[in-house]
Length: 179
Image 1: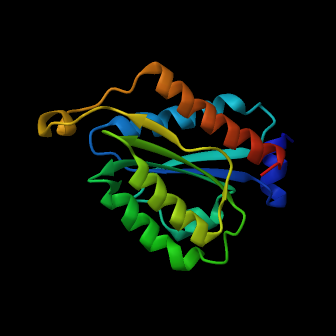
Image 2: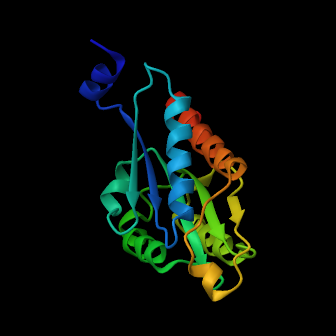
């Protein structure tokens, strides 16, 4: 019997949830890179399942069932995008006092600074008593005109590599029981 099958039988399969929303594709690329990095960090014997779900489809059960959490969101008008705020509103009270110490990390795609989104996400995570395991990954697209803001985004390789490293860190830490 393989390690994964054995872990399923005794109920110790660890799960990494990547909850994301994206308006112009940039944040989706970042979430995909985090997932790719997480998968590459795990060996054949690591019993960690990785799920990447749009925020609109994820709920309290997904968060409660996870061993670690990646939140990937764009910034809209200086704060987190509505679909991610809706997700966090829906999971907050059902998860309060039930996710204390759960490891998490943040990916933000912003046009100019991202500070408002990072601050807002960190305040919510602090209220949930999540444990931040890395500095937020902030990608600045420099989109400043309505046309540029609404245009599809292509995230550069260096930024995608930062997202992949963050995903790898969280997956490896969850797998090893460090987080």
